[in-house]
Image (tube, rainbow, N blue to C red; front, side, top):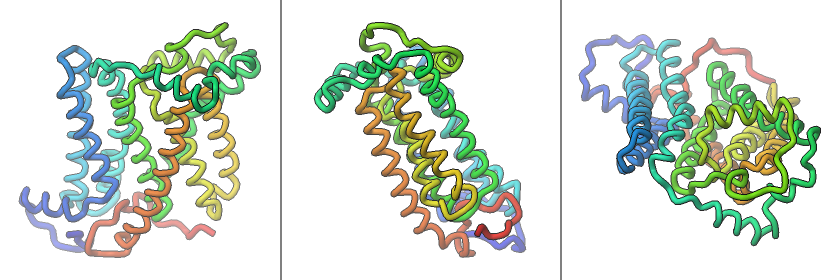
Length: 331
């Protein structure tokens, strides 16, 4: 049970820590912990290989960091204050983000049967042609650089939307964004293990290569050095920006989103086009990404409203304890 800051602290037994942790767990905690357990379970049933060994150690490390952070914060081993708030934020947020790099080893360790043929057939059934091939008519250096810039800016949009909120925001807006983001990440990463594919660029032939310049080369370098290679369904280059656009629009009555939401939406639209133009994704990957973003946003609003009472209650620990001093209310 959540203790007021002034409560006298005595030695806490492991059983008491566990009981307090379970009482204080939020929906966000349950999703993140269940995800790490699932990913560790996936690699444990994979055939023995060097990739499987690396993925197992990676996944075990992420799970342990999350569990220890939750026990320290939700179990109230740490006193209320900035340290506990920071430990929780870092320990629950970053392992989910870093799980993407585990996929680089986990996905090949699963020795999957690629389903690109089926995904292409779905594209052709819906549109008559897969967009990656249709966009080839616009394959000029100027257009390629435009879409490549937005594809590459995905990483900066991620940082701009999540990191300031994680460390500076509070209340309903923070709860909505973080639950939505953890849903996109966890469902998306699980989806990669269930629907493996490499995308149009590797699964089909094109009349000519992409004619790009600086930003196209930056995209190629990033994908080759850090990409998970079989991470196409659903398209998280679609899901995350769409979630951020929906979140920004939903909070357009507050700063900075009253002026930033059209910018976020514009970037999201261009990123969605870029995923297909640059031949990384099938159209059905994008449809799945859009569906995931809409679900994540709807679920996040519902969960955030259900858990709002925790911030005013002394019966359970708030979902996100303040890291910074309370600022003036936004107009």
